[in-house]
Image (cartoon, rainbow, N blue to C red):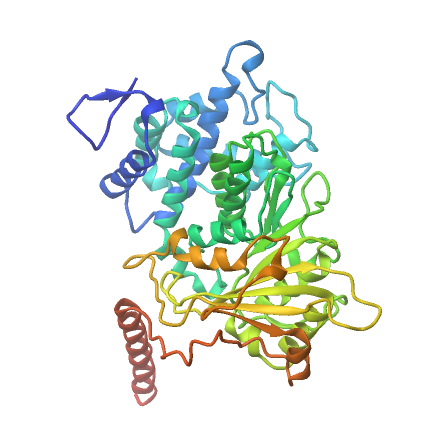
Length: 515
């Protein structure tokens, strides 16, 4: 029995099987608010440690099961008990040691690793741990009393493997969503949280099913693969671990996505990792690779970093690219070039990819020629926290170029879900129901020729697009010009504050220069 914390009276008890996602998140954030130093430990660092501790605790629970139900331990034997028993410097030393062992590169597992399974360096059970613990570090040694309390009071007393998978997965995803301000603070990396409802709509439009293998070349926190897995699970309760795979260059994103996917899909900790820390753009001919083998995907869902600054083009890196551009453009063509024939894709792109000149124009033309680019979904502004980014989703199917020289695309249908529509993640969050009309207009993936025109859905001939200079995709659906969307009042106030801060810094520099 577990003590019910943060709800009801003192001492009220109930079983882990009865926990809800709301109960889990409320309890953990209460601990963060009441028992941790916000200056020393950010929210995302706190969630990272929840991931470390849950992995070690659940792995210890599974290895302690009786008989054939037990699984070989991945961490050194007795790890959880040692973490429970230690405090202060000794806890910091022990957790650092465990992180170094589990996060060691291939072939560098430290001496002293003792497991019941005897896994070698090439076994997938160690690979998942490597992704989760790569570059991991405990929070400051001076805050070990807080970490010890988190282990002893909030994680250790409970049997986490008995918590309903759907609730535990939803709780961890909610914890990550609550870190959006931390992610926004690093927005120069181009990483933004995509609303899960939008990703579910994309997966439904692509009609993913248990026979598919879905990849994400810029995995982020894994939300795209989780949405695809959930849509697959509607058709079948048995969706294999080989059905999803992703890569991300950032080790932090790799670990958060790994735990997010493990908890939301029920994927065994002993399977090959669902996410690799890798640069997809360097992998010529391979959309995404697993640690055990190359993935041959049937579906790609990708929202790449919307980053164009600080990036140096290197056409020697990918001689197969049609043109070298910024991150969104390069991810778009990476997916279009490396997908096998017949694979379906949905790639998020900013407005600049739709109408930019130079490399963007080249990629649009080659995309029309080599793929069936059948749908463009123009998304409302305000979807992405703290930004007024204008985003779109390009849906296409990889095709074989026609010997006649005709484009593989016949008609590009544009659905305008932007004009007169605005959402924010706080005031007016987007839901799947908001896209009901889009899904109805999109229709079945095998019957795209049966679509009907509407005020928000308009077809454009590929031949006409190619005949225009630049082959612009900056297309409307007949609703007329859109009033300039300045964003929510909070967005406007935030931009004004940022502008004032920058002005203050500039004037201070001028004053200092004048002595």
